[in-house]
Amino acid sequence: MELRRTLIGGAGLVLAAGLSTLWVLSDATPRFNAEDNRIPAGDAARGKLVFIAADCASCHARPGQPDRLRLGGGLSLASPFGTFRVPNISPDPVDGIGTWSVTDLANALIAGVSPEHKHYYPAFPYPSYTGMALQDVADLYAYLRTLPPVAGRAPPHDLPLIFRYRRMIAGWKWLFFREGRSAASLTGEPVHDRGAYLVEVLGHCADCHSTRNVLGAIKPKTRFAGGPDPEGTGFVPNITPDGIGDWSEDDIVRALTTGDTPNHGRLGSSMTDVVANTASLPESDRRAIARYIKSLPARPTPKP
Image (tube, rainbow, N blue to C red; front, side, top):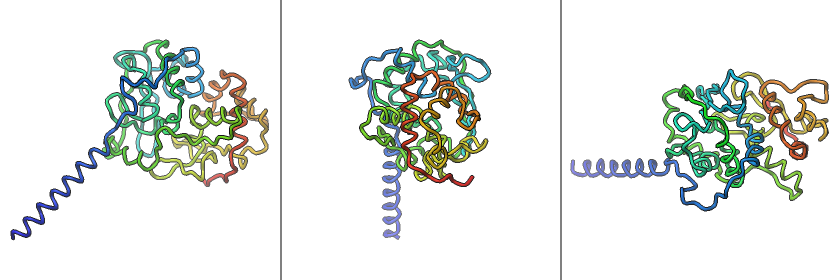
């Protein structure tokens, strides 16, 4: 009997130690602190271009009104894990991010960690944004501060109970998230490498143009090869040479400027918002995006 009590007590201690370790490991740890001097001063004019390239308005502009700079959030994003509601990121100090510091924004974009030290769901594309240059983070912060405050918070996410416990996201990050790293393939050629940054990081194009596994992470062999729309409303096309290999750089630049495709079609669905952004970028950036897309490895389109 005494041996049994000892074994049970030992097992309890091991379990408690394991749970304590799991609790520590699942904590959301910010990458930057308030005294961090790695983040430079920001410039709002440059930040406007970062905002456009990162497609921020497409998700965060309040639905049902035409001003893409009123970032009151509220858009519903359907997913296999439930419905996510995009938050207010206007400078409103109560309902938006008006009280955030540039450090808070850097932790959100690069570490996927909120000011309350909670993990963000990867429906917010920080797995791509994590490769952002700190100067771009600072510039974006400066620009966001110039936009109009919008009162009102988005409704809460509508998720099954199991997915409401954010510490579980630590496991997802451990499997699929590489903080501070980008999937961009660099060659040293300036136009190509600028395109890599725009496509892989700011534009987070792979988030839509890829197929995901059962845990919601991109399957590497389908990167840019298309897949089911993340919201379950169709199939996003393959933009590797297997899909648009007959498009020239000029064709891609034209599509990103006007929405017109070389086969006399139009880019539609969510690409309408994307084109609204890319058309506002410098022509050199559209050219860089085209150069990088033309360099992608050919991958077969996954079956719907």
